[in-house]
Image 1 (cartoon, rainbow, N blue to C red):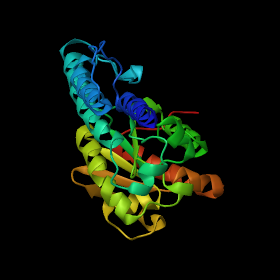
Image 2 (cartoon, one colour; image 1 turned 30 degrees about the horizontal axis):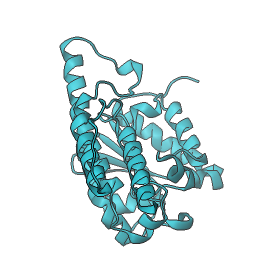
Image 3 (cartoon, rainbow, N blue to C red; image 1 turned 45 degrees about the vertical axis):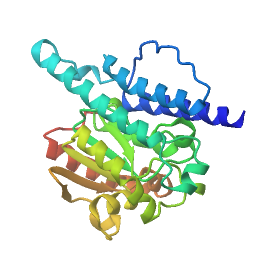
Length: 269
């Protein structure tokens, strides 16, 4: 019975990760009968990967809607990227590289947002709220991040959001270098698939891990770095702003710097 519960939990986690990766529709799978639960789970997983081809829509802000040939090309691009993200999400859901994290997590927290986003936000690691929902940045810090996004004139659906880690460290401790290294393959895959023009690293952990730096976030912010062909901007983590409200001003200055670099202006309030 315990084994069946584990399979059920794994299946539910997998479907959650696929949904946050962008999958919105699955056709009815064929009935599978087998005496071993592992075979049933494996076949179901393969079926899910195959059926990502049925994806027809992803949540993107209405202002990005396109028509005609350019619109068809955009949808094709979204479909392919969602399929690729879904395949990575399957691997993440089954990952046990970090034994402590795998044994204490409720579920993995893959990533969410526009698979063709110009901007990718990278945080540090899931917290309790994220571990419970499977979605990054949904707690108090996440709500503050949403306000920052809206102040820039965007919605969360226009950004792609993920973390350095896809599992919650116990007691919300900082990720260890080994854990970050174990999870780096998945982060690199997300960056490659989404192919953003800009990345914003929120907090010291995200900035140092992505850039391979040992500098404090205070020295890394307000400057653009390069990660391959992507321009990277680093700033304070929203959870730091909750503890130090005075840091909201430099963060907003960083966001204005990003918008200027992108040729955009924040909306008039």
